[in-house]
Amino acid sequence: MEVRIQAIHFEISERLTAFINKKAQKLARHFENATVLDVNLKVVKPESAMNKEAVVKVIVPDKPDVVATKTADTFEEAVDVALDAVAKQLEKSKDA
Image 1 (tube, rainbow, N blue to C red):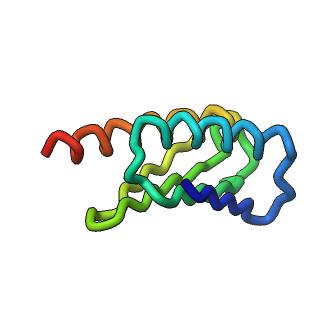
Image 2 (cartoon, one colour):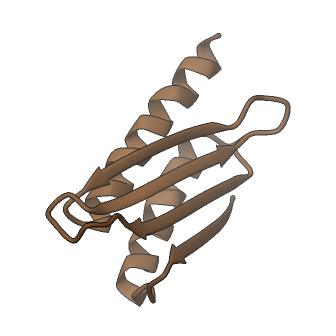
């Protein structure tokens, strides 16, 4: 699975990149047909708690794209929750 990470208006840390790649590998093991994982990260204004947004999009050939947008206190938490939501959607589409 190809992982594309985009940080909007900030520099992404190596730790956060490694975290996302590790989570992507886990997702790829469960859903072998998923080819691309797009992760867009941005800080939502105004500066306050719960201002880290992650938009996760999974591309599966011959199926509609699966997208989840989540906001949390940290990017790790937002990515984690968004990936869980995407996994649930992929599971449903696999059953259908």
